[in-house]
Amino acid sequence: MDSRIEKVIENLRINNMEGIYAENIEDVRNIVKNMLFDNCVITAGGSVSVKESGVWDIINDDKYNFLDRAKPGITDEEQQEAFKAHIGCDFFFCSSNAVTEKGELVNVDGFSNRVSAISFGPKKVIMIVGKNKIVKNINEGLLRVKKIAAPKNVLRFGIDTPCAKLGHCVSLEKCENPDFADGCKVKGRICASYLISSYQKIKNRITVIICNEELGY
Ligand code: SF4
Image 1 (cartoon, protein in one colour):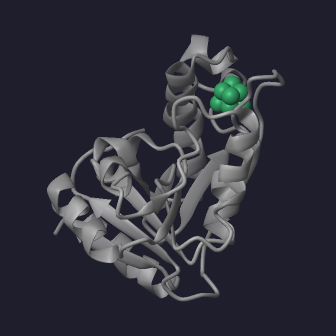
Image 2 (cartoon, rainbow, N blue to C red):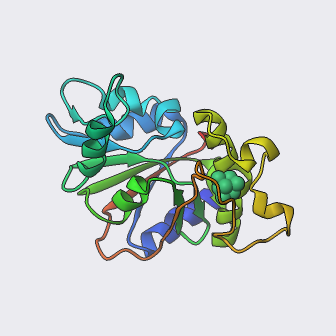
């Protein structure tokens, strides 16, 4: 195993989170299949990594009770209900914007349903994380959001923000290392709530499957 991934997994363990190594997305899928049980209640955040790894297709199987907040034709009201359904569900699937070498998770949300679920509610949070999301520290993780994750996500959703045009957060136009919450003041801003997950009160409620391939952004 790559020594950097090994270090992350060890530091996640020290922070009461479980880190599992996956050599490739085939491994990721097998790990996930072995965790699930018939009729388990599943919710998920919108995640390119979950989709690229094929995990989205697994949790959509009829033998599980997946409450899909993005299913075709869903109304705004139904989507809000699906967001709230993470409270008490068996599994919540998502990725992390960044994972530090010290075993911390860095996440920035717009509607905040994902950071809410990561913090509290689901019995288990399962994160699918490609090696491209490993960073040295929290500051580098927050810069990763400004330089990579947020600009790519606004393009994915067709949202009109400064970073959609610039390719990076507007706050980086002023200096190289802006305050973490500095950014635009437009309606479409997707950086609203900032969550750092460090030492957890409930041991292994969060599992991070780290894949030795690049996944998502
Ligand atoms: S604060 Fe605005 S400009 Fe900066 S990354 Fe977020 S959405 Fe883009």
